[in-house]
Length: 276
Image (cartoon, rainbow, N blue to C red; front, top):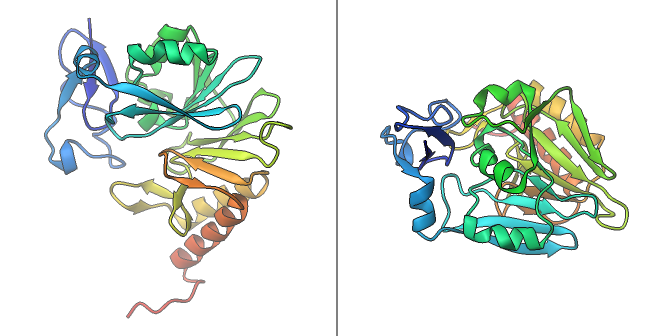
């Protein structure tokens, strides 16, 4: 059996023959082929290892490391590793280079992986097998898993507690199960950090909410209003998105609420602008 990897999104499929298409890309939130060419391209885990891809690991604050991949593969997202005495938590997922495993083990390994939405399921099976950990996805999106494995767990409802100071909230929007992780552990992140995947995306002037980012398809005003209501009840000062440069360093809660209000107003017409 080989592990085939979609070049566009890095979703992994296990089988004896190359898949006919990538289910993740063949969806109106994504696109097939480079720049939407429609030409499905594949590589394999063996080829990626041989090409020299390695995970980068950068500490950005006490107890928090950003894990990337150089050179990038697929969408190019990063994951966040929260180190804790009772077991490390990996938020979101990307390709795992076997050459980088010792470096991650030196930080305490991974006890649990929690993934915000299907675009980042990617190499979840590899992380689970390598570190012997459970991987959590929301049940509303579990049908998008492309490489099933025994330690995959589906969580339900709108909230999942991972331990003191760590709570996952389902906001929906981008996908029905799209989620965020709030890290508000006294003494480690006293002001609260919200990890948002693609559920809430930092922008140069604030934050935005989209059904599809590459295809520029917005969410309805009512959905953003609902998401804003959930965010309003959370305590966070910093927001970290799915890419290394997508960070709101301070006053993130206020930025998100203000941005959501503008988004809603522009869609429902209550925010006056001149268009013609």
